[in-house]
Length: 95
Image 1 (cartoon, rainbow, N blue to C red):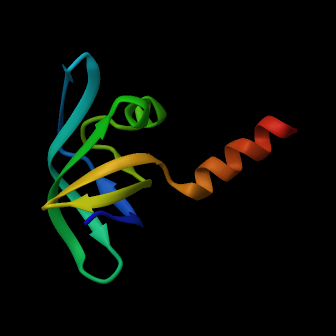
Image 2: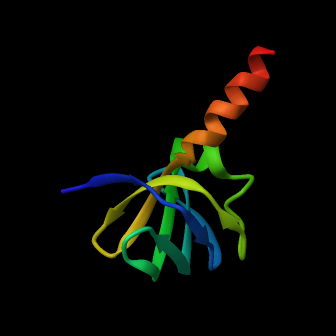
């Protein structure tokens, strides 16, 4: 079961990048994920294909980022930037 959550913050670990089946991915092992109810946990954070394209500029080693993601068996999969950032960018583009 996958549960979509918006995480408060992630401090990324060392980023490794590659391709699998022709699609780009990035993995950050040893990242610190802040959960509102569980506190800080060390997890592997990953972003794949189109989701990686959405966060590529912020998904760098040692960065503190706000993203939308879901937990998946001890790791965290990024689906895009935090929702409040997306809304702010949409407003700026409309202006």
